[in-house]
Each structure stands twice: as structure tokens, then as C-alpha cells.
Amino acid sequence: HSTCSSWTVDKKWLGQHVLKYTRLSFDRAFSVLKRRKGDIRIIHVKYRDTTKATLETCERVCKLIGLPFSDEYVSILKEHIAKSREKRKIQVEKYKYTLDEYGMTKAGLEAEFKEYIETYC
Image (tube, rainbow, N blue to C red; front, side):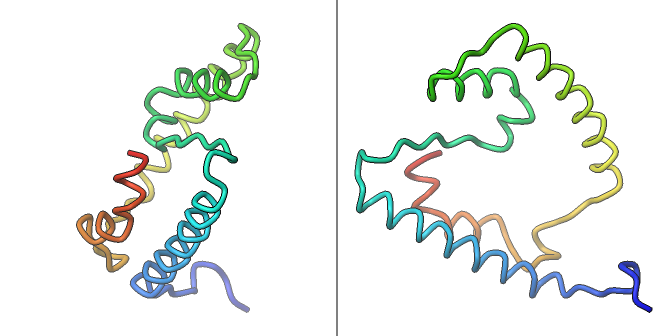
């Protein structure tokens, strides 16, 4: 009988494979974007913006895609944000990760995703 707590994960192996998969996904997306220039609308949203300026980010996305940003929606979002922040606070205290434990460095990731960073960030 196996439980999650008895599993071991090679974090460096996992890190390299997630990086490889992410790179492949980005390459495929860039390929489509280059072939269909101007034909596809894309909105790039930084994760940090979804957590630090959630309402503003949602409003920006809604406006860009032509959806209303009503008072009712703002009220729903505020309730969700409050619950999400509490949950995230608990998770951040419970789970701590570093790039190093996954065999990565900030410089390595910046080099790997240089094209994306230069184009969209």
C-alpha cells in the first residue's frame, strides 16, 4: 500500500522536465504567432499582477476582450480575492521552494526564455 507521503521525487529531474515541456510549449506558441501575424489577439498577464493588482488586472483583461466589468463582478472578485489571499498565506508558510532544489537558476531561466521576456515583459 503506497501513500503520497512515501513517494520520493527527484526534484532536479522534475525541474528539467518541466522546463523542457514549458520550452516546447513556448516554441509551439511562438511558431503559431509568427505564422499568423496580427491574426491572433493575445493578452500577456504576469502572475504577480494577478496577485498584487488583481482587480486592476481583471479590469484590464475584461476591457481588452470587450467584457463588462460591472459592480456586481467587482463584488464577486473582492470576495474571491479575500478567500484566495488567506489560502495562499497558509500555503506560502507551509510550502517553500527554491530554484536551486529544482536544478535551476534565475540566470538560466532568463536565458532560456529570453525571447519571451524581451518580447512581452
